[in-house]
Length: 277
Ligand SMILES: N[C@@H](CCC(=O)N[C@@H](CS)C(=O)NCC(=O)O)C(=O)O
Image 1: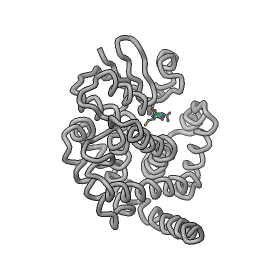
Image 2: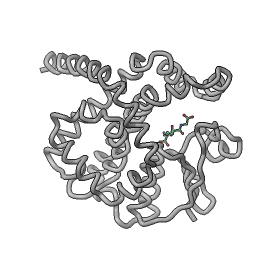
Image 3: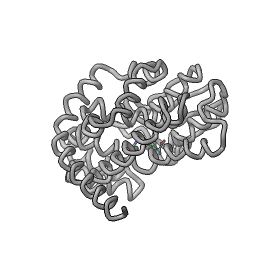
Image 4: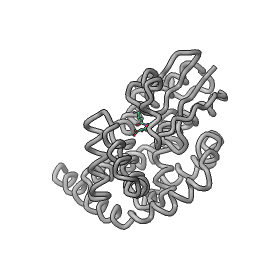
């Protein structure tokens, strides 16, 4: 039996749910309420020492890290395959996982946090807020969290996030123009699935077109994603009306600032490319 420890609108859990749907697998969901710090419960930390969701437990064996969970599911349930056959193409596919794990995921949390959760934290009693800060065991994560709490979109971590998304969208536009209609060609792979929640979150926050208004290939990819059955059953159908409304309400509040910062990032990137050329 598959058990998924997860939490509502978490992008890492969404990747795993999409993969499970595509593989036609059912699972038992166990909710880990991140807002009440349930991820730090000692019993849960035994399964996932980082104190994060998701964790998949397959016949008693825990698997952690969403990218690795999706890879695990692809090997455990081989049909339909979600990796190309050719080893070189597999390595290229995994570059997309690296974009997600080395920038986009953190970036996505920066946008969500500065738009929505920061507001929630401001309204918490001081003691609860301090417990929330203290509970983040990892110093790097705590720095990010506190910086974005304090400075909102003007935190340097938000700027890093804008750069990470800009680089990823540049590469997506290029690769989709060369191949497509999916990132690795004719078939959906884990590259697409890994990116889906990260792009969806920007869309639901009303921020996506800041990056893709002039990127027709990425736009076409996003339309295709929204119509793809496993995206619907694994992601969009599972988001509540309240969650959609919250994202639609708060995201646009940071839109102008994000667009202004992105313009600066693009200028810097163009200058580097010009110097290199
Ligand atoms: N690299 C991990 C990241 C997991 C992660 O940070 N998950 C977030 C939710 S999307 C979480 O559990 N956050 C808990 C917290 O911030 O305390 C993965 O991909 O599984």
